[in-house]
Amino acid sequence: MKILKWLSVADRFYKIYLDKQLAPFGINSSQYMFLIKICHSPGILQDSLMDMFYVHPSNIVRTIAALEKLGMITRFPNDQDRRTWKLYPTDRAQAVLEEIQTVCKKTEELLLRDFDEEEKKLFTALLMKAGKNITTELHIERKEEEFDD
View 1 (cartoon, rainbow, N blue to C red):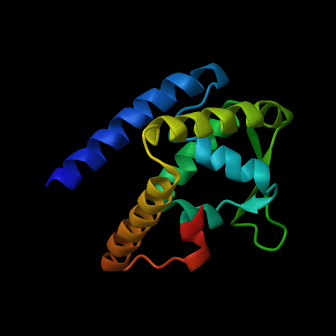
View 2 (cartoon, rainbow, N blue to C red; view 1 turned 60 degrees about the vertical axis):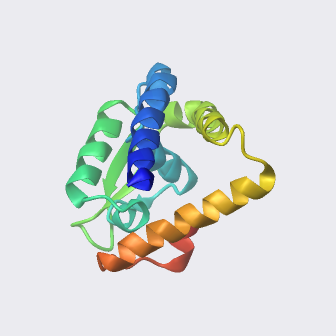
């Protein structure tokens, strides 16, 4: 039960920390990954985010709507399928992208502060393996490369 306890503690408090660090940009810990992905992949289909972030479609819709309201992204209907949306970052999002990525990098560094390089690699590999185990048990299929992000 120690693992579950400490996964929960790390998850809760890294989100609190990240929320504080991201507040100046108007986003939070549940939005940053979507914004970064959209900035790196302009025109990405909204539906494809479900396969990348392991979240319920309603959470994606809510997050995309919030980012759009904040002026961070714009949505346009997909010409090939009008039921889906293409997502694009705004100039505002592009202007703060590097700073947001820096906040994320510093947060990871904080979480791994007392780890040596070998421990960082091992921890990352084991955490990914644990994630694969639980998603496999729940029959959540993802492409292997999606576990690398």
